[in-house]
Amino acid sequence: MARRYTSEAKGRLEYADRALEETKAERDASDSELAVRLAGGDSAVETELYRRLAPRVRLYGLRHLRDPAAADDLVQDALLMAFEMLRKGKVREPERFVSFVLGSCRRIVADLRRGAARRQRLLERFGSELAPAAVCDEPPVDLDRLAGCLEHLPERDRSVVVMSFYAETGSEQIGVELGLSPGNVRVVRHRALMRLRACLEGTP
Amino acid sequence: MRRGCDRPLELLTLVDYWFGDLPSPDAERAEEHLFECDDCGGRLRALVDLGDGVRRLAHEGAVQMIVTPSFLETASRAGLRTREYVVPPGGRVACTVTAQDDLLISRMRADFTGVSNLDVRLRVEGQPEVWIKDVPVSPDAQELIMAQAMPAARALGRTVLHFSLVAREGLSERVLGDYTFDHTPTPP
Image (cartoon, rainbow over all chains, first blue to last red):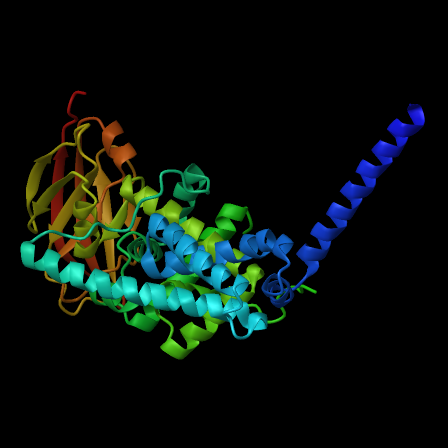
């Protein structure tokens, strides 16, 4: 009985070791290697590939759509379609799957923009207004500390940073409104963000 | 095998990419790199997190800042309730802030033609004079718009605040206008 128990436990341990080794191998594999394996029917790598690509797609979505919910939708839409095509062998070069996903994201966002442009025209015609970028309820930074860091920025730097993030205004428009050249806005913004980051990290 | 990033994007490139200030080919190259590189993606995400924090603080009126009409339009679209006081040069206004206000805005009118360097002087009786140096303003603007820090404004008792807009040209100074805000707190 004792021997059987030991044997079962050993078996479980070996199984766990194998699973860990496989997971490590998947984590060490390149994106291309994982995509090629998934295209070849190895569904075990799908989770790892999704885990890598989802944050990249979301970041792309945030950059182009400026809305967390829309970025989440993009992750679902782009990756569901791309993985489906990869599994069905419809991606011509599986080793370039990441580029394929980026291309899919660009197409989806372009379609959304065309829809948004139509919506914007309708809204302008009927007098409503588009909502500004969403304000995150709990941003993952220490707000008290960030407020202190913002207060320590020179007035010009603070205005440029706030205008950039809050009003989502590009360097040309900020320049017009604050009497700066677009190049100067970019320099001030970069310098201010470096200062804020250093202040938050507690470095001089 | 996965490797670390051997050609990390510069912070300036990441910032410009995020705000749409990279020329199209450079933006596409940055995007392709970000789609392959989690190191650079992580750095950009940290920047985005910082921006979320800044947006939150601006939305709450947590800090005093010089703003523009674009800022006020964004605040209005976001549904913020803004209390504004428009004061001409030499003007005086009775002002307050209530619990219902989200933002307190001072609009100090002046002619900024030819002004390249502007400072703001604040005097409050019994307190040392405060200078806000190198305030950004367009020479074409007709007013300086200042969002007051809401926590400080709400905590303010009955106070008279004297602001002056001072243009600096070389070693000389020119006062564009003096503005008096006669603040009375509103009981909660």
